[in-house]
Length: 358
View (cartoon, rainbow, N blue to C red):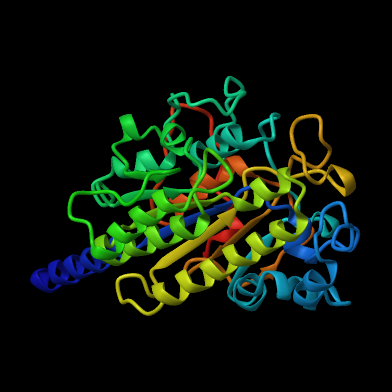
């Protein structure tokens, strides 16, 4: 009897440990993408505005439809064909689904720090390349036995090594004009590194999102990391230039990347039914003629959105009329989806309980 009890307890512990070891997480950010485009699709006041669009007919043929449901699905098909059916979408502020920043700056470094650390640091008030004194949940996880050496980041913007503090955290961060990481590069990684050098962007501090995505996919296939952060950037770049057509195309392209990533994850036993994805943005933007800008003096910049899908999240679709959610809750929630309690020296936002299965 005693031996049988010991055997059962050992089996339970083994199964529990296997479940914890089987958890994976992909966090994706889409820089400066407004909640309006996520939930309404192309903006009727901008898609025909010659100040922001080169060829309105081409853009309308690709992204316009009279119904909101059809219009938003044209722009973000993965969001509305997959996440809305199998996950959760937050941030339709017109339906009482408020997702808000805590930091008052409403631009990139403060926003990413808030997402990644769970703490809106008032001392972070620029996008300067300063090593982040705060510890991100990525660094915290990298210090845990089950995740040590299994965390990586791929980011289009070249400030991310400082935000993640790759110097202290020992997390590999491929960002900006940098390419694939490590000494044993595949032929594909070598080609990507060459193309990054040969195909500069019009933006000094970023590389094309396509390179960021392809580098992350090659690394995932090769190294099987358990936690990956992917940060796209083109949406914000084109918005600042006032190019609404390219802004929409960049959002649609990022959605395609997500679809390809999810399809690949579900085709591999290491990730299939064991991986959660969280998608969000670092800040909102203004409306109407202010859509190109964001910051503490631009109304709407504090309004963001959040999407989640995975085996531990109820498939509740588009959420409405709930208590406000804040970006500083993402770090604790992401960790909880891995069965890890995130601990920080700073006061961090709590877990978003409705994202977790009971």
